[in-house]
Length: 435
Length: 124
Image: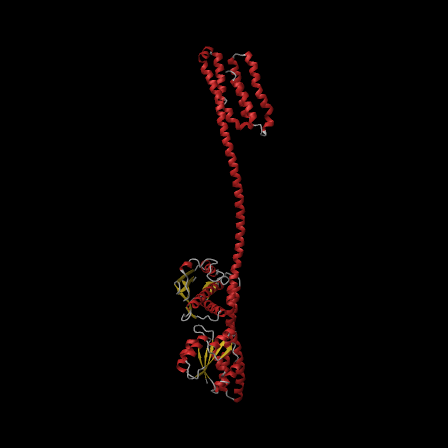
């Protein structure tokens, strides 16, 4: 049994040599390990003849210990630590058995079987540890492989997600650009709806300007005739008429001027500057424009226009063209709703659209009420959503109410409430803070 | 000759009165005005016998000129029925056809040519 430690050292050298055979370490350690495998055999041959069994035990134990300690110092063999540690029991058993054998021979004789068993057990322990550590290593290798696999998957997934994120950011940018374009288009679309109304609204005052200036020229001729006749009373009466006419010309000229200004304001990109504004003027102007806009498109359409505007309404701080756009949108919707109902009910139905303004506490309330087709409950929640429209494709952008919501609620800190009964009509109630 | 002018624009009133200044002074014509179809019908209930000519705008809030025309033809058929001329800013074929179908005697477009109107009055 005295050769166990040599055998173990020999096997250890072989085992490590085999384990690193296909790694980068092979070249570096090949010679050393080969020599390490040879040394125990050589030592055994040398000492077996010259020393007692106990002496060989001690030498073999010491050699094994030195060999293990040497290997443990090498960075390259870190992964063999468990295997190397498994040799300590054998080292201890060998050296102790040897020393006891040398010093207490009789005691050793008596307990020899115990010492032998201890060495056997220590020797077996190495193989036991080896097999379990092999399993562990296999397990470890499997886990490492799985880990690499998972890491590769994670890396791939991360790359994918990063790409998706970049794509999404691009898309968001595109969407923002598109949104800005759509808002501009919505403005232009509503301007298109207005064009006929505007033409009508401008034509009327222009007709008056032309007519009153023509008739004034005639009146001046007549006045000259009367003066020639010496009828000063009649001449004075005519002069009063002419003066009145000039006032009318001025009035209608300003009316046309206001309409053109309003139109320019409507199409211009909003300045977002709030200014003290007479809401009644805006409401009245857009009420008529919306009506004539629809009238021009469909000549069969007619509606009763009712305006209940509070004459005591103070000026309020708003962006006039934005709020004007909201009102235009509400009016257009109201006229559309009564028109739809007129088409389905026909006959006795009297389309009616009403706008009213009044001060309630610290707020101004604007109500646009129609007796049209009403909003079905099923879509009430959706009408404020962008791109939601009940109009046939191409007729509505679906942005009107969504933009109105942005303008009133977000930009002016106001509210939009809707009261509607299907088949009976709708009221849009806009409240804006006074200050 | 009594003429009823129906137009929602109040300023047509001084315009007509001045354009027909001489005719009014010589009592050739007499004008009355209504600012809506409803007002015109109320007026006609009292005075349809006197009114010879009705000049009505088509595009008015509430009762349109076409509806007014329909009512006039239904409510006052007793001969001689008043002459009704429709006036509109939208002088297109569709509008013209609709007015003539409903029984209009003539169709004039804005801006109104008063000299032409005076010529037409002479033939009445």
